[in-house]
Image (cartoon, rainbow, N blue to C red; front, side, top):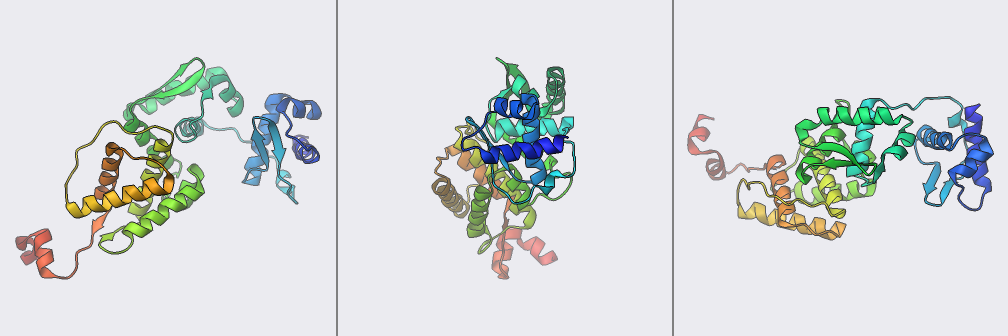
Length: 293
C-alpha cells in the first residue's frame, strides 16, 4: 500500500547518515522518481510541516515519534486556481526559476495541462497588465514591477476565500519571522500617538510592506513614481523615519520610488487623530462644517 511505502520512505531516511536522492529512494521503494516526489509532498502536507527535507544533495527526514498522520489516505490534486496561485507565488515570492517540465512533475500534471493553465492565466490576469510566457522552458511573468506587486497582493487575498486577511495567513506566504518584524515596526510607529491604525489597515499595511521588502531584497525595485498626494512636513518626517527603520531592520536600501510608495501606503491607510480642541477641529474640517455638527 502507498501509505506503507510512505512510512518506509521515512524509516529508510532515518537509517541513513547522508541525504538520499530521489532515484535511490525510487529503487528502494520500487516506484518511479515522480512517485517519490509525490510521496514527499503528501507526507509534508499530512504532517502540516516539513517532515521530509530536500536539498541539492537529496532527502533527509526529521526524527518524530508519531507517524499516525499517515494512516488516512488522502489525495492532493490541485485545481487550476490553486496551480495558478502556486506558480505566481513561486516566481514572485520565492523567485524560483520554474522549468516547465520540472513543474509538471511537481504538480503531477501533463505538459498540455500546464500550457492550458498558462493560457487561462493570461486571460484571467490580463487586468493586471502582466503576461505569462515560456522562454527556454522557463516560465516568466512579464510586466512592470508595480503590476507584479498588485498581482501578488490580489492572489494572496484570493487565497483567503473571502475570509479576513490576518497575521497567520500572511505567515503562510512570507517568512513568519519577517511578518513579526514588520508587525513590530507598525506597532512602534502607528499604534500610539498621533495616528490611528484599525485592524483592516493594519493587515493591509503588513501585506504591502511584506511584498515591498521581499521584492526589494531580491533586486526588484520600483522605477517609476506615482503622484505624491501631499507634502505635509510632519508626515514626510514620519515616513522618512519609517523608511530608515525598514532599511535598518531588513538590511536593504530603498530608492526614492520605494519611499514614495511607503508614503502612499501611509496616506491611504492611516487616520489622523484629532483631539477635542475646537481650534484644531476647525482647522481640520472647516468652521462651516463644525457649526453644522
